[in-house]
Every structure is written in structure tokens, then in C-alpha cells.
Figure 1 (cartoon, rainbow, N blue to C red):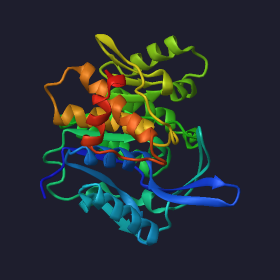
Figure 2: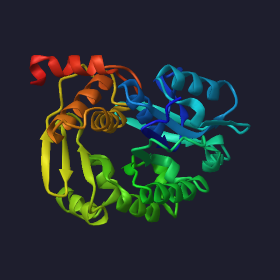
Figure 3: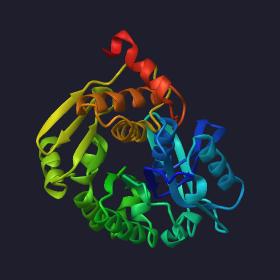
Length: 305
């Protein structure tokens, strides 16, 4: 296979989503895996790199990865338990995680395919993988290595309760300093800088991440792309919202896919494509990954003009 242009490193897991008082639905998920699947479905050579359990849940993740067109050579099935995300409420999403000594923690970068990084242009890191030692420091070291090789780093803190782990703030600041692209929601920002209002929190993030283009998402209030030299604004596009699970992952995935597949586009066009990708995801239950035809159809609607 041709080595991928994009790789998401981190956790793949199974979401258990509460449908009603007696019913839960399981779906493959995980922030890094969701982003990889979005980028792959949008027609860019992509992979998720991480470890999964060698059981039914791990096989479902492998099958869903292949169905999305991901290069599955980067997934390491291992004889450890699966990582689970329990989602008792989906509007807005709330989570807790089950995964002591689960497979994701045993990911080994030394086992990546020998040619796997040859074409890599953007590498993604983020979410709870950076708060789960020993995986977290392994990924931080890998991010430093890739940045030194000229690979652009994309980072989504995707704040969860797991980020209370003692070493997380150090890793957050290190990844932000490396990043060319950061996706942060208004909720993430408030948790990252609880003593600051939104304006001062964004200024604090800029000081930590001086070279990053910051994709700042605000749900129904739209999104901004804040570069070192200016700001692009994008309203939310219309969507019949099923739930908002995976919308943040879709927005950064859409931005990355547009950057890689259509480099001649202006940044405002990349941002609009990201908004359309998120709107398509919002119209489906769970972390849905639309294809480029669907996103272009959303963009073609008169209400998206």
C-alpha cells in the first residue's frame, strides 16, 4: 500500500451509548480513531495508529477501519482488555472510561510498518491517550520525533475527566508548542483555563502555541480559525441534529482532509469545508464519518452559501 499522508495516534475504543433507561448501544469510537476515519472517508490516504484488544470489540474496530479505507497495518491487536467509553448522556455528550491495563496502553511505535512514515504530512495527537501513562509519554516522544522530521502536528486536547492525571498539563503544553493545528472547543478552553474569560484564555493558548492555527469550535455558534496573523470566522451550517457525538472530531478531520487534498484552497474555504463536515456528522447518530460527496452536497445547499 502507498504510505498514508495522515496518521492519527492515540486511542481506539468502544462507545457504549445509553439510548434509554434499559438500552445501551455499542459503537466503535475514540477521538483519534474518529478523526482518522473522517480523513479516510474524505478521500485522503489515512491511518489510525494504536493498539486494540484481540477480541470481538477489537475486530469490530479493525473492520470499521478497513471499511473507512484506513491503512490497517498501523493497528496492533494485543491480548489485553478493550478500552470502553460509557456515554450515559449524548446531548450534550458526557463520558467516563473503563480501561485498566487495556490494550491501548501497550501500543509500541517501534512496531509501525517500516515505510509507514515515508509520506506522512500531518500527524494527529490528542484526547485521553495523552493522560494515560505509559502510552502518554510514548506518544509525546513520537510527536517530538515527527515534528523534528518536518511533519505538521495536529492536536486536539478534547478535555475529559481523565485529564486530571498528574502529568497531563505538561504534555498538553508540550504538544501545543509543537502544533501547527489545534482544535479546541469552547468547553475545552474553559476547562483548560478555568480562571480566564474566553478572550484571555485564547491569548493564553496562543502564548503556549505560537505557531498554531487554532480551530476554535462553539457548537451552534460556529467556529473560528485563529492564525498567527489573523482570524477567519465561519457560522455553523444548518443540520437536523441527531446528536453532537463526534462533531468536534469531524471538524478537525474535515479541515485536515481539505488541507491535504486541496492545498490551493484559501483558508476560508478549508474552514467552510470543516463546518460542512461537522454539520453532516451532527445529522447522524454517533460519530458518523461523511464522504466528500455528502460534504460537497451540504456546501451546495442555498443555506450554506
